[in-house]
Length: 208
Length: 205
Image (cartoon, rainbow over the protein chains, first blue to last red):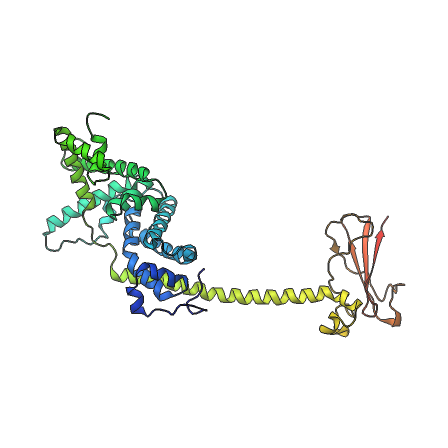
């Protein structure tokens, strides 16, 4: 466990406003020094992505919240082992993927898609209700497709296509070679394509 | 390489190929209608996949997450303090035990440790009920012993005014250890007046 913020800290603690504006690298040093304000600022900067990755990987809001909580507790426990100067965001992504894999192992197969729709805000307020429903259906379709992937393919696809990281970053986060990431991503995109086309044909009344 | 580039299209659509492969695929697509059709399907599928989602977590839920995490971290710190206190008590107990163990040796050399401790009158080997003493002494025969059991002293003072009674009538504490070997029993006589506790190893029939 890292030292407490006010227990022999050698760095002056940041004010709340300063901490929220500090870049992640600087925050890492202060978190290692036990600064809880810096930890909170780091959470504000990264929680959207952590929750988003967990939600896409687990397909369930409650599980994603639990996973995010576990991610930050692990970050706090292990921040002493983080080497300053390295990519803190990538390190947090790696913990997130590991936590999601653990959760998925405990929980079993992922949720399909319809149940997810009940919790998602409709979005796109300017469009009509019909367009909103179609959008929701498309989201459910994508989530079903993601749920059909293997955990490693899902992690690679979420990080590469949904988080927008490049192949090298994804390979570092997942601890595999770039060629492996490319293979996983290619397989995942092909499965998503087939899955979506099959379900769209079913919805239109054609043969699956 | 096959005449078609279908296997490269999933990577082509997001420009994940090497520059040389990108050029090859581009050249092929310019000439191959089936591959262009598949490429269009991949692009549509990727658009669907990457369609932006509304954030499923409101700012209130995020704030709650932060509070829960920070609360658990703070409570972990508070739990750490009693652990430290418990550690302090354990260290104190260990220190007392160490002093207790060192007492017989110190009584052999008066003025050394004995003076630093509570004094011979308050020593654990003085009068009173037999105190639990440190582990059994090594038998003179050099036989290996299993951990000994502390047996109830056999009426050390009254019923058995033994020849080991200390001079001056000071009480003697008799402690017997039965080793794992039933033929060996260790009898330990301790008195505050004697310079050091005597130990006898006795072979039983």
